[in-house]
Length: 164
Image 1 (tube, helix red, strand yellow):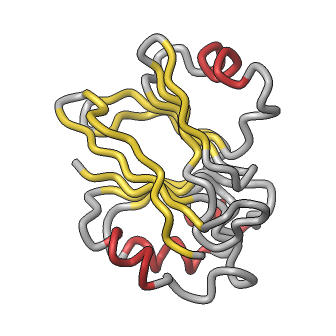
Image 2 (image 1 turned 120 degrees about the vertical axis):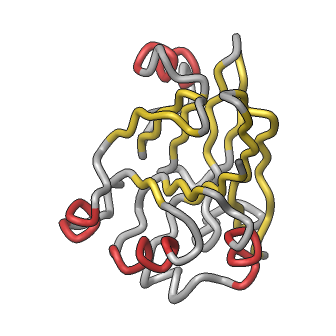
Image 3 (image 1 turned 180 degrees about the vertical axis):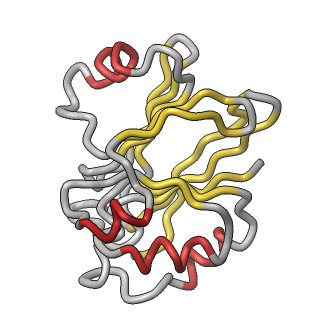
């Protein structure tokens, strides 16, 4: 199962429509995760034209995103892999331990908020932030995440550049 992970798209200020470089990855997606700060629900509808979408609500998301179906926290499975998603994981210091305490059943925790890509693994748990494809802030490039999941196992997780 191919999962494309996005966060912090910040439409319509930064995301006017899906960038071609992002769409090229979405075309092969079986599932799309959005880690919050989509800002307007029509972006989630746009993403859903590619694959099913699971999203969480970020601090810049309004009632239309909540009405679309984005809760503050998601705990579910992707192809048998227990995962959790939250927008804000808190400060960098102690993040891994904090996410493991908050989501003890998860083997993958996805978050956003910082716009800074993050990929750390410890004791069989991966904590992953795809960065932002459109609002890179101080990062050299806009990024997304790609996950490959099979039979409950996260085979591969990587952060890939999509914009300059």
